[in-house]
Image (tube, rainbow, N blue to C red; front, side, top):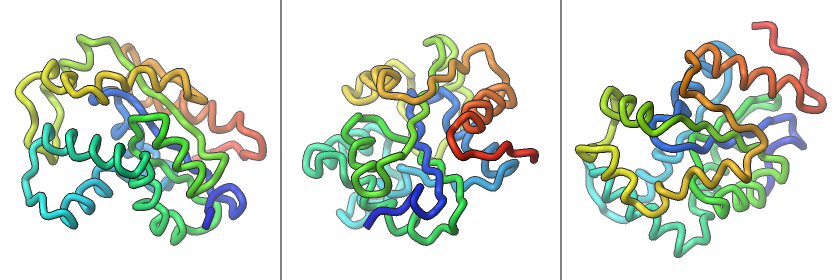
Amino acid sequence: MQTGAEDGKLIVAFSGRIGSGKTTLARRLVSRHDACHLRSNQVLRSCAARDDLGEGIERVVLQRYSAALDRTTGGSWLAEGLEPEVARLPSGSLVIIDAIRLPEQLARLREVLEPTVRHVHLRAPGRTLELRYRLRETEFVELPTYAEVLADETEAAVPAMASWADLVIDTGELAPHEVEAAFLRWLESLPGRVSDQA
């Protein structure tokens, strides 16, 4: 079953390296523009609980588990996990999926949810990402250094997602409200969108 543009929902999938500002932007859109924030980590944790991976999982374990799911499902685990949540949302919802890491995940989202799922990629210079990583609050048992995070093959390849994106935002020199403004300008340029005056 497809849900999305045909029932008035606009679904936008974010991609970008850890620390690029995906969740910060998503939270601003929730608080200021009534968006719905759906997190891939929650779907991943549900799958991990189903497979008895336990609590307090380290990021490296989840990275490996996510890669295994992508291999066995062709990236469909995320779309299938999100479909019930999206189906329950009211018409007209702005739905933010935070986040995708592979082109296959994007393709499956478009197959399962809606062919017009949009894709926004966030990026920042390496030193900025490293600093943000050290300062961020997280639900995971994190790796000690950002370099260790990037040792994961899929995470290392995330910058290539920019080539698949409808919009790329460089967040390195932008304050959160400026990133939000860039996103909203793009959003308002989409066919059929009405300017958000909030």
